Each structure stands twice: as C-alpha cells, then as structure tokens.
Length: 612
Picture: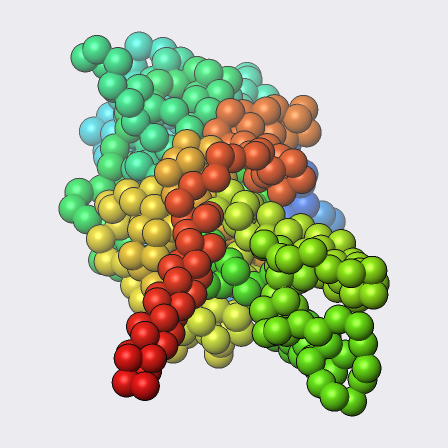
C-alpha cells in the first residue's frame, strides 16, 4: 500500500513537471521543507499504532500548490516508511480499511480547499477520539480560521492541530492552532487558539498539541436528553424547583461532577419518547441525539441493531433483564376453594371409599344377609352422622368399631389433609405466584404481549411472540398504570419492560395491585448512555462509568430504587391475614344449596303425604 501511494503521488507530480532544471527547483524546495511536519507526525501519530490517512486538496486551477501538497505527503510517507502505515483517500476508494481512521493528515493550498475536505467528511471517515492534523499552505487569516473551527466543531473533531504559514511568502516559519469548546468562562466560544510556533527549525511546545480537552469542562453546560422512565429517570417538584432522580440520573450526575459540567435536561416533544432511529429523519430522543441537539441521551435505552448502526452506545451503565410483567394467577372462586384442595383423582378415591363404607353399613345393619343385634333405620343418615358429625342416638358396642374406623378415616386423615390444603387457598390472594412463566403458557392463556415499538425489535424473530404483539403507541403513558391494569386483569396480557421497572412498581404500588415476573421469558438488557455517532464524549464517559462499576458504586445507587424483599418474604413467610368473606363464602354457599335442597324435599314429602 505504501509503495502504491508513493508511485501514485510521483505519477501525478510527473504530469506537472518538466525535465528542465529551472522547473524542478520549486519541487526540490517543497520536498526539503517538511521539517515542520516530520516532528508532529513522529511524536503524535506513531503510538498507538494505527494507519495514517492522508488526503490532499487544491483550489480551482491550483496546479502549482497541488504539486507541493502531494510532494509533502509523499515525503512524509517516504521518510517514515519504517513505521508508518499510510493510506491515501480522495483518489481511490479505501477498501482495505473499513473502519474510521484514527489518524488523519489533510493537506490544502488554501482555506477553501481545506473547507472542501472537511465538508465532505462524515462519521465513517474519522474517529472522534483520534488525532487530526490540518496543513494549510497559506498565511494565517482570522476569518477563515474561525470558519474552519466552526466546521470542526460541527463534526466534533476536537483533537486537531492546524498548521499555517507565518506569511504567504515565508516557508520557514509556521504556526499551529487549535480550539477548545469548553474553556473556563468561554463555553463553546469557537475561536482559534495559538498552540505553538515553528522557530529556528523546531516547534517550541510540541507536547501540548493533543492534550485531553475532555477532562475538565470548567463548569460549562451540556445539553442532555432524557424523559420520564421509572426508575431510570424521574421528576419531582420541590417548591419551584424541578428535581431529577433515578438510577441513571445518579450515574449521569456523578459523571457531571467528575468532569465539572452542568446539565441542561431536554426532553422530546409529543407522545414519543424513544422514537425510531433511521439513517435520517429519526424521531423522539433518537432524533435529538442524531441531530446533535443533545450531547447524549439516556432513559432505559439499551443496545439494539439500529441504534448501534446510526448512533454510539457507551459502556452499559449496568446489566438488567428485559422481562414480562405478568398478572397473578386468577383468584380461586368459592367453588374452587372448596374443591381445589384435592385433585379430581383424589375426590374420586374419597367418593369410592365413602360408597364402600356406605355399602358395608347397609350390609351389616340394614340387610338380611348379616345377622346382628343392632338394626339401623336410615343407614345413609347414620353414615353421614358418623363421617361428618351431628346428633345421633346411642349406639351399642357392636357398632362402635365401625364408627371409630369411619372417624379415623375421615376426621384424622381426610379432614387433616383437606384443611392443610385449604389454608393455602385461603392465603392465595397474598402468596406471590403466577402460572405465566413461559411463552407457551402465556399463549395458552390467550394473552397478548404489550410493548413499545422500540421493544418489539427484540422479539421480531421470535415466532412464539410476533403474531401476538400489541404496540403501545402513547409512550408517555405511566408504566405504573399499565402494570396496575394488568394486575387487575383489565388488560388481557403481559407487559414487556425492564426488570428494574417491575421491581420499582412492586416496591411502591405492589400493595394495591401486584404483578409478577415471567421467569422463563427474560433476555439480557444493557441500558447505557447514547451518543451521536461522532462524539468525543463516549470514551471518557465510558471510562469513568467503568470505574464506578469496579468500585461497586452503581449497585448502591440502584438499590435506592428497587426492593425485592417483599417478594422474598411473601414467598417464604406469608403473613397471616384475617379471614374475609371471599375466604368463607364457599362453605356458606354449599350450606345454602343443601338447605334449599332439603327444603324442596320436605315440601315434596308434605305434598305426597297430603295426596295419600
């Protein structure tokens, strides 16, 4: 590649050269006059080791100056061939380097030509955390320099040095300029700042060229995009002040204190919060970030394919899960509370045992097949009395054994098991649990999946889900309201939302309407700060967030807004509650039914007796 670039440069120069000695003198001077470029290249573009992208541009009809820029570029590549990996853009497409260049060196014969180079750049051409060197073979002009600085800031190219000549005819003295958008007392005042001077064949302060400008914002304000997203970003009023708080707000405000900047919160207008990210014309918060209306945004915004393509997502603030808030198991009806303690097979077994006991009683005490000293009238009633209790006439010793056998079977075995199982049914309204733990169970219950449009991207390839998804288009609706409606079966479905939001809801609203986490449907979800594609803030902010995580501070900040102890205590040690009508109504309903049946039988018997 280096050999190709050198040959290409020489071939282009040959088109403008003659073989006469007089024509070669300016070119030789241009080759030898690169001392002011060699030192910056060797000191600032050698480590870390990345390819250096060169590009040259000329003004219209500027053939002579074009030759100088190409020869300077060729000389730099030739003199540093031992370590330099160079690419040349603007002539042939770079197919060997699909990534944005970390090092860029641009040559131009004037300010218009350099502006032309910068205006053709997009985020795929440069790394905003990399280094850029602009070489303009023209004298310093304030107005043109201010225009270039404005373009550089629009591109978010901060680590930059601009080299210009002291005078138009002086090729031995140069000046290096840069700019700082976050100077103390001059926030975002874009003006060229003198970095260094090339005097007596050397730069005076070369080590200061690419200092870190993102380590201290000197109290300047950054526009930060967010919106109400419990528990990540929330708002409360204290007097006339608006206070922001939440999991991610705690992280962002600590980052602001570390880098010494103030926060100007901004939110998208309308009913769209996150919005749809596209190559252009994005909506909601995604559009604000893409258009550089805010320096970065946050609010439960995680990684996905489209955000990674058109924006930059920093280091995840923490790792959580995208879960489904499921309603509780439907409460038992009075009939279910009476019969649910035993399964159908158990009830069948009990019925067969009771039938056998009844037949044995009839056989012994009310048939001619067995001779006994006792004779019961209405043996079925006596069996009922023996098993269920009630008034009974005195029985002789012969029948006591049968009575004891029935009492042990019913009272000491069946009743004990029934009452222990019934206790769980009476506590069912306070015991945490849901029978919607898999996609198959949710689908079998004919429930829908409620989610926002941005959330649906995570489930678009899941065949068990995508046909049953229902989009919540109004993203400003309170999440607590949605989960409350689900807890009371006003919405026939589950709500797809991060686990932290469910835990926050349970902590604050769970006493009024509890929801549960579907245990086998969660996926990893990594929310973080989202930046424009070309942002110099990504690397320093991600570094400090990583340090917060390593120090164990992020889990502490999160615990202020989540509490799982209610769930755990309710599962392991359910608190006793006073019996209510919903608990006892089943027994009274059954008693009323049997009383009504007895009354009908009594009326029938009276009618039949009168007819006789």
